[in-house]
Length: 184
Image (tube, rainbow, N blue to C red; front, side, top):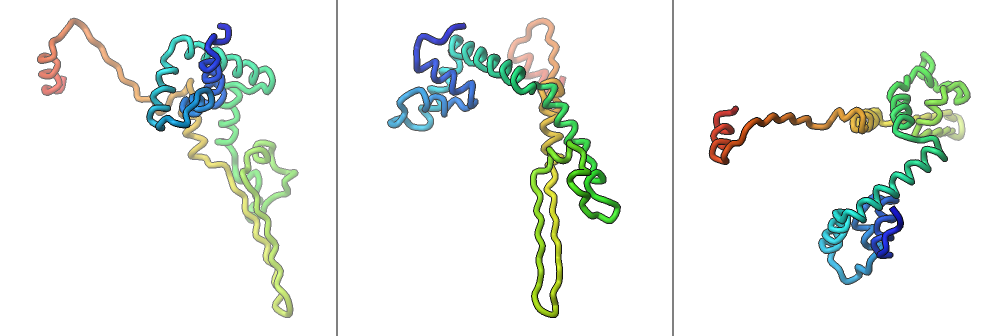
């Protein structure tokens, strides 16, 4: 699909495809200084229901996904694999049996690329009571958040409510209410 003929709608579609926030995309494309937040939200929602705008957004998102895949080799399979690596991190890979941190050069790559923070502090006192205290802290990835991300993955859908409904024939409202009361 070519660019939208309306430049404001095209700007909206591009901004939304890039950032994923309809209200921000609307503010980016349209003059909103005199609009209330609720009006901006409603106008943005209306635009996303427009078939041409929605098609353009989907096209732009597909182009971005293809470019990301080609340029960075990152796709859903890569992401799921990376999340799996993080889930399988073992603290024994970075700590010895005494609880001391191993040299970073001995860490597996998955650990070196997953740690979210390292604090190293050396506190040294003065005088006769000189004391050397070394404090080392590793901030590990959030395993629970990681598992939630895996569970929400499009192909896994671990948290999606599954509702199955089988309907044969037609019922009146009165009959449906009666069946609901009876628990059928």
